[in-house]
Length: 146
Image 1 (cartoon, rainbow, N blue to C red):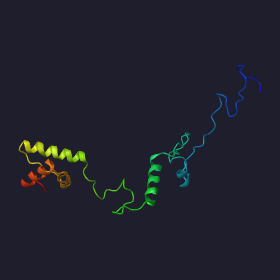
Image 2 (image 1 turned 30 degrees about the horizontal axis):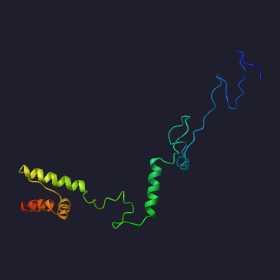
Image 3 (image 1 turned 135 degrees about the vertical axis):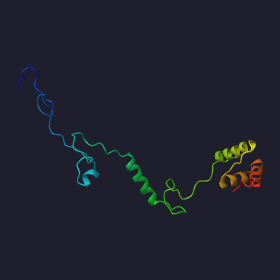
Image 4 (image 1 turned 180 degrees about the vertical axis):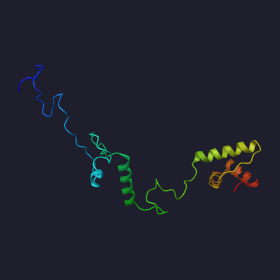
C-alpha cells in the first residue's frame, strides 16, 4: 500500500483503522440469563459497551448457591433448612448480655429505680448462682422478675 497523504506508512495491524474511518458497529454481548428471555445485553438499550455481568462471585450467584445447598441439608427442628435465615426461635442471651443485664439491674437498684429484665436473662443469672442468684431473688421479692 502506498503511504497516506501525510507520508505515513499504511496501517497494517489487523483490525486497525485509520482515524478518519468510522468505527465498526459494536455488538452488545449479554449474559445467558438476558439472552434466554430474548433480550440483548442486560435489558438496557445497546450502548456499544459489552455486558460485564458474568462474574461468578456476584451476590445473586452466591445466594443461589446457598439456596441450593440449603435445599440439600437436613431440616432443623422448626422445619427451616437454612440456619442463617431461620428466625423461628430467638437465640439465648450471650454471656455478655447476661453480664450487662446484671450490671444494669444492680445500677438501677442502687439508685432506687425498678429494673425489668427479660425472663431468659433472669434464668441465665439464676443458673450462674452466687451473687447473680441473689440479685434474681431480690428482683423476685420486689415482684420484678416476670
